[in-house]
Amino acid sequence: MLSYLVSLGIVRWFDVVELVFFSSIIYTFCLWLKRDRTRFLLGYFYAAGLLFVAAWFLDLYAVVKFYRYCWPVGTLLFIIIHQRRLQQSYVAARVVEPIGADVASDWLHVLMRAAFKALQRNKQLMFLLDGKQTVAESVTQPVVFNCPVQQILLDIIIESAYIEDQSLVLVNQRGKLVAINGQWRDVDDKNSAVVHHADDTQNILAWTQATDLIAFFVNPESKRVTVIAQATVVPDLTGEKAELVIGQIIRKQQGARPQKGVDRESFTQPLG
Image (cartoon, rainbow, N blue to C red; front, side, top):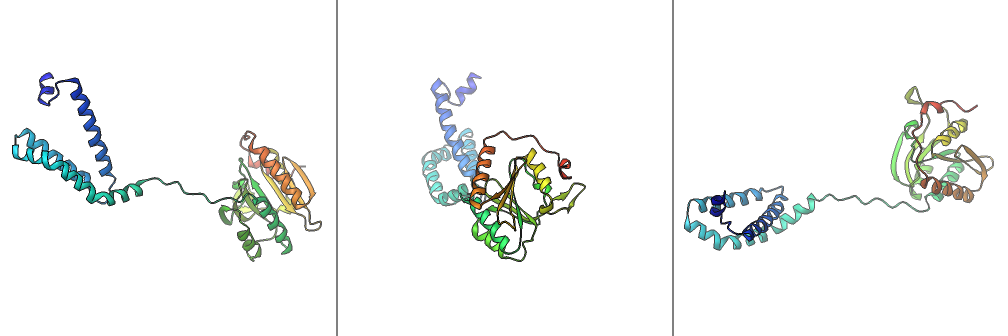
């Protein structure tokens, strides 16, 4: 073993330190070359290194001397020539986190405004604010958005003929519009929808009793908002008051521990 180390030029302990130092540099350089996916630059480097090792063991003095004088200059030229390509490959290989769209801080006000505007178009909508215990699987989603609540988007939706009266609008409690034109699903058949929201207040009450779901709609007769949350119906609210109530409930629920999962079958029948 000692003779093998001597043949490699390793005689003193700091020879090992030097070996580790230069090995780290070569390893880092190889990782840099590996980033280029279009050309196998690392293969050329391996081939040149193997040629030098072969020349050393075969005592090819001229080749070894050529490497000693020309290798640093050649490596520098290699880096300069391929610098731009390697930089492009490095950027392309990076994992870039997508920038999420900003959610408006007044998204509740935008939703409330959309509810009143829909009522002016003779369309009563039930808005479901989905929380940690999602009810999305129990609601049909004919039109999916998954985008931040925006006033211009909701204006277009309300003005269009596609939005249906007596349908559910699913929004999560972080201010993102999930889906429109929803209906409650039948437990026995996930492809079928059952009762409209106007006839299903008790069903929503049951959901809010066991989940952090919040629902609200505008009464077409009184033009007042009804909020359903935590198994409680709060009727006859102005739009501003309803926004305050919903905001307080959301802040309270975000600070609370999530509850366990809910069995959907217990919500298929209205409470007696």
